[in-house]
Image 1 (spheres, rainbow, N blue to C red):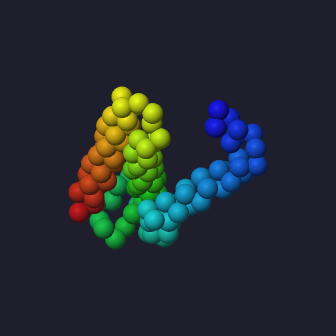
Image 2 (spheres, one colour):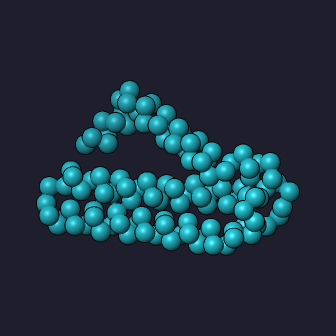
Length: 113
């Protein structure tokens, strides 16, 4: 019910602005400027160099950051869950999603070095 109210009220604009802000923040944190300057010279998806980053790497890094944020959101929902079964489901799924994001991020760093 809360999601329906959020989508049809003035807070819809606040939600959209927050999502746009997070996308822009994560894009800059993922190296968007470096990928625009240096990455346009290469044709590879992942360049095994720490000084050059491509647009594809930036997009993958943004998705990894959103996965980690979603895992943290699942852990936040543990406090709002009413039953113990739901709490365990949120804890388990939150840590699994964060672990997957960490493994993907470390594998990307391993490819880069």
